Image (cartoon, rainbow, N blue to C red; front, side, top):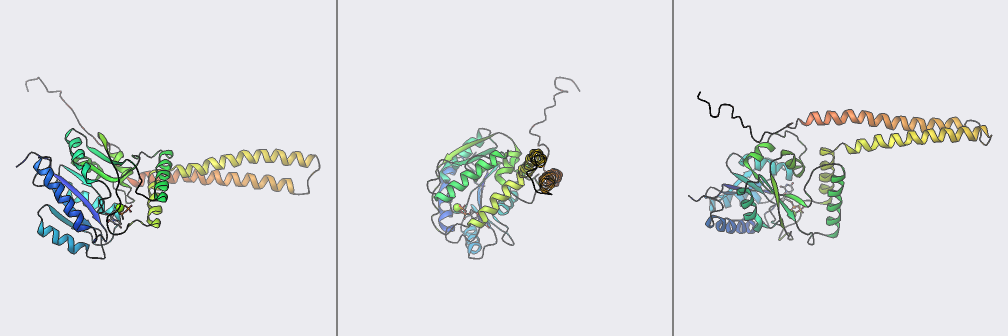
Length: 324
Ligand code: UDP
Ligand code: MG
């Protein structure tokens, strides 16, 4: 038995019949190389998670598991979505591995940095993020929307790694930490930094999808981005409160202005009182909505039941040196 780590690579697949053969071939080649270098051991696996595909994805995975002992398969009972499929895969394998790497089935993320990830893991890092160097292979639209998205998330105080998608290595204990997050709306790239532990990045160039089509059409992308924001930040609620406060200030200015106009006799009957009420009521309403929002924000944090802390080490040497 070699001294390599026990690595599991988790690959979510939704209607990926066009890429599976090539993907497994490339992964198996890499596994062979890493085994000969004693980076990974014989028990390491490539796990394809079929996310309720409608095509022959599962049939192919099933065949692959029979042909190669390095390949394993998990089949979800329905299409649960990329994030759920990924978490499902990671949670299923977490007790069997030393560390797990998640990667998309289309291998747009460069698998040649996997050895670097493992080396970092051996150096004591619990989480290794795969980060894209440049986005030249993405369309202009995808590139700008993605960069805009990371900026907005940053502005809202969400801790995510810039230009990192779901290509990452996690140690077994980091996976154990992740398993303590019981939330339903998954946004893994926001959750993993919350787990903690020592982390580092490896950099790579993103390729184009070599076959098949993107399973993330615009609609899914927008809802994913929206999920990311609303699952991690209550800043949008604060924006309403701030806006309410601004309208209240305007209401005071308008009240003074309307009164002056009325005293100077420049107004029709009823104008001044109408102006004052409209601004005042508007401001009070917005502020109230913001206030209610603050309570909803608190509820939202409670309901998530995220772990408040994860203990990395407990050193207790009280008895050291004593004869007990
Ligand atoms: N995927 C999935 N379930 C879904 C949609 C996508 O498991 O409902 C998988 C898909 O098979 C792929 C990964 O998620 O392995 C990323 O999808 P894709 O490459 O189409 O997204 P893009 O790279 O275009 O953002
Ligand atoms: Mg892709």
